[in-house]
Length: 186
Image (cartoon, rainbow, N blue to C red; front, side, top):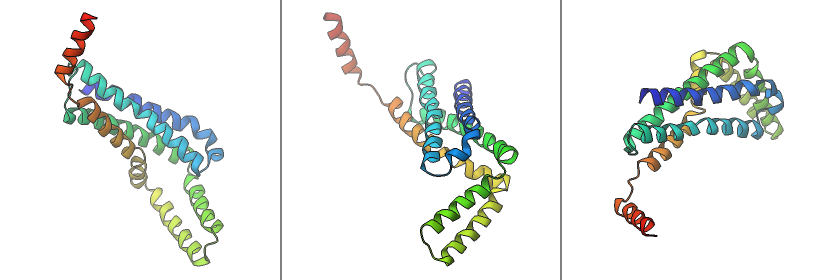
């Protein structure tokens, strides 16, 4: 299991990390609105397709085309954890070495959205204070890593659950045998 998990986990993490680095020069053009969210989460979903392939590979090569839900879930969640760890390491390097202004830009965007919504000055002031506190916490590498981990992990967990369910379903042996007999006589 270790080889399958490491192989597919590292490939998944490499895909998400590579895409993060590839999009770095365009970060200001992409922005923080829906375009950025859609692009970011599409990349995460694509990288987590390796969970599906990893579980299938384990089932076909090691499980002799059988796998329990628990084993499939274990393989998938380990791939997810490795991929998320790669994602976090890539973001930590990008944030602290190449985009240290990300926190300020994100805070300015959030404050501008509140101002544009015609909110009262009290609401705007509360958002300014909230963003100052967020920026201070986000500059802490441990807090930053935890928040970053929570971006891809729920998607990986969902894909793991769905894949484990699909690959662990038992085939109806009688139906398969009848199909095989029908094909042989045709």
